[in-house]
Length: 301
Length: 332
Image 1 (cartoon, rainbow over the protein chains, first blue to last red):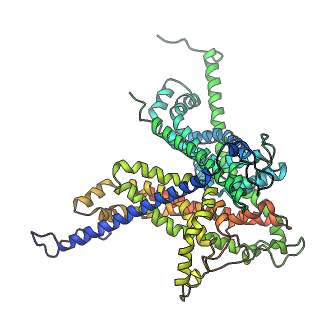
Image 2 (image 1 turned 90 degrees about the vertical axis):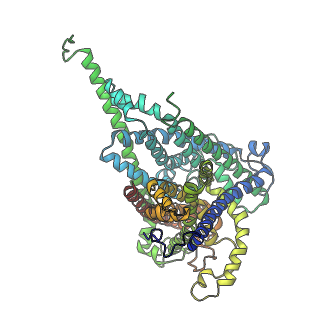
Image 3 (image 1 turned 90 degrees about the horizontal axis):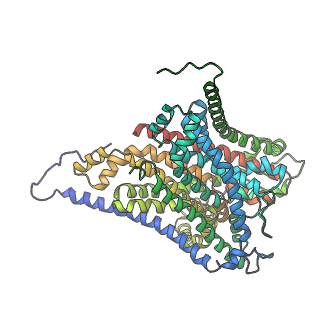
């Protein structure tokens, strides 16, 4: 580390500020201004994306969009994505039901029990976070779709695999924040370890776990790539049965966006706005929950 | 007062025994989920290879990396040579778009993180980091859609200018050769940069917050300006942390699918030096062709692509994770 700072000034006129001071101050102003401008540009891009999608989406978003299925011919105007919206919630619901119990149990093992297997699991959780979601989709295709066909359930499994490492990580992080004294107090009363975890540790961490799950749900809602290989899409009618091909909001946006028909793109913009709204509601609620219920803050009188 | 000794068959022992067994069962169940996580990663590798076997058997393992031409229509059920499913151009596309993305995203992310942790007024820090995090919440398909209709038209003047002004130069000329049509490696790289920016910025922010307060104050006390403080007390210690953050961001960029598919143009027929040319990446070709694959061993060949993508993503992520872990140890 070079420390030009510590070198004594070659000549120091006692009354006027040293000549290099102005240069240093100028460099400081210039660099900090550049950092501020980059920050502003980043926020501007966020506003550009949100503003553009809102401007395009609001032109078509309405009751028809939220209550109708798309027209049989994609170039026809009208119709909506109700089947996709319902499909998204069903598929993500399946994924949540699968991934949350597994994720919480995995985190409990990693944090509360430890040991060599737990360390491996922790490492493989990080590996799983890094697996591209399209590869997860291909995996579920090979594991499930090849034998049972495209279905909402297959999509739910794929999204569960996307969510699982996120849930494990978030839960593990929050479990580490639970004070050891809580566990010791419970164990000292002669309560078993399992009962301590279920009745003391997890309830203390619940708001953090809920936050992590909601962020994972938000992430799963926006996923498109793995669903392309597993639920395939179904633009014709509302499908409630998860053993059949389904549509999801993200798939319908993708499908309609790339058609080249103006009417289809109008629907896709409204869909994009709806999807962003759903994702943001989950994300923002999660952050608010995290702020209010964080361990160590606001609980003690 | 002593409690009467309890015999082996007394109710208390019985209860204790029952509790102990429940305890052990709970341990087994949570340990099983740990095993499941490891099993899932292993199963991913096994199932990808399993589906790729028909293509590998027909054309040989090495031949996929020996060609940059992907022409499923030339595949027949019996021919072995030449392999119509060359995947070199997808690896090239993945690397090129990720490099463009990282060149932009890392610089911007470091600047953003520095500004948030050390320069912004205190009341502004939390809102700013929440806003940057929001960039990560926007779904990939929305970025792709926005990219096609909002970003590509605005990139056109930049791309055209770059290609006409610098496209004729000797060394970098071929890289910037025009014409610029819109969908291109360049456009995909820009969209990827925006998508990985919040991830790299969040990790950098963590790295910068653990920089020693004492050293920062020491620098300021010696008369350093804010910038000098950042350059001398924050950045040098954070170098390996920034490196790890960048590599984890790179791992994300490599696997990004839908947004790239929408803005890269999906040219699967070869490698082009120019960043303004249309191309394809490993994820984009899978997303684009998987459900419409009709040629012999077409799906199986896509599984070969998925398998290599899995390998590359794993290597990049593990390296990033190790660097971050080591960086955390040296700083803390």
